[in-house]
Image (cartoon, rainbow, N blue to C red; front, side, top):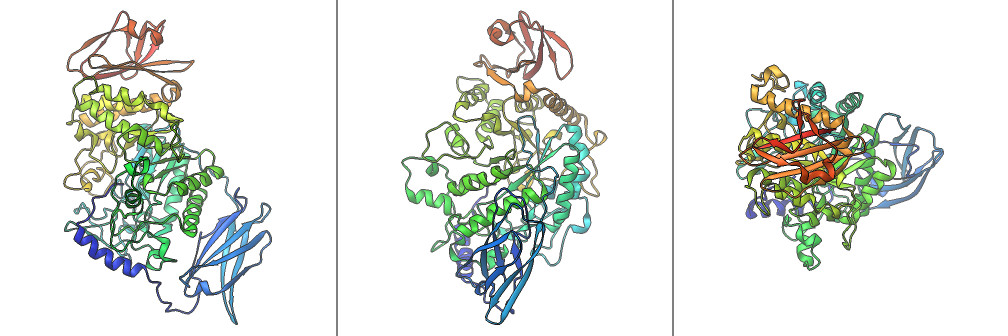
Length: 632
């Protein structure tokens, strides 16, 4: 997620009001009561037997609490400076039975009670993880497909608008719409579905440069335990995940730990002033990653980067507050257990507190060892990128994040398609980035991509050149890592972010009532779009069924004269990927690659299924990347 800061004047005015409001508890206007408990319920049989309940309501923090239930012990109750909160530390013994117990608060002759449920853990799939054998498909739910028009708008929400004619408002896409189109994703060869955040964003419209915008993107949470009603709510999310699992697809949830929306219920009534980072005047993050990895960095620069707010309507959370840290970690566990998500993509990873992230990652991995976690750290070099995942570099702080999103390879692949070949240019860029993989403990866990919701569309970046498109897609599907495709890239959706992010987040044609074209079907796509779709489909299915390609070793050769050759191989198969990035056909001398090609005389082109000779040369057309299954 990437934002453009507001003007300084607007930010200061907004922040002055916000900080004044946020620094004061809301006065209790109702009779003392417990109005909510988070997590909303829990389970018996979890590996970690500790649970901390957030108890909230008017004057709820002024009561003494007790619980009577076999196997459940109230160890300690904590109060904060806001009398509306209490935090209860519980232990749940391994032999505790599912059931409902009463949380009772006592103050003199006054009593508060609230029921709380402990569920039995289901045997449904959860925490399965994603691996290099998978293909991830990234969907922005509001812009993909509208399966239930009845949930497009709600009058009682802060933003009751929905208008497809306005690129900055909600358009009505929802989880039912995604579920309806799972067969399309299955046909394409998708094995994992990554959704931009689905948690409630009950945010008012915000003024950004004179344009009123909604939080359709999902990155401004207002209630962690509710999936946004406009997407269908919790039940629709459960149904989607079960339907995906039934088709053998995994689901990746987009997590945000760094910030929440200004309308979040606990921001309106802060448990304590240190729940968020606050400054004498509004302070925006610098978005500069260097102070985090720089051994010479000034502490002041580090503080602004980590503690500064993204924008005034997204307060920055303070992970050093122990109650907040527990709250976020437990929500992550609750989400995996309740909904059955399989992997965790973490927004703005490098803006979070390091120690908190390691603790959160470990809590998830302890409970779900196969779960994959990959964060967003938008950096421009391999060393910086390695800093935020398990690495082989002697950094003072060692991250335990299993993977990360590979922004460095993304830059290199786009450069390779837009630059003429040179010592450090063109396809040399891809080779050089992969040559530095030794910095990672496991580069196969990195998530690779060509575009996403925060950047210019891939097809536009390469000048709408279909040959370049095929080269880029071939690299994405055949190099190391876990490939991710942004919705619509497979049908050549295009555009640049200028004048706004909404231009690269347009509706998928055919996903909404009244669409003139339905590009979920071959009949609705034009000839060029079908050529792109079928090219990606062929790559995806071949990759899925070929372990040597998705999980085998990688050997690459130094690019020469605009050609770049690498091999993916295991004991069963050897795949040769040969790229000619020039404008002329080339005859590639095969003896140079004998280290991997020796004993093979021909290759099966996986796109056209034709067998071609490898000796003594391999003929490669201009602007082409061949994927050849080598044969003797």
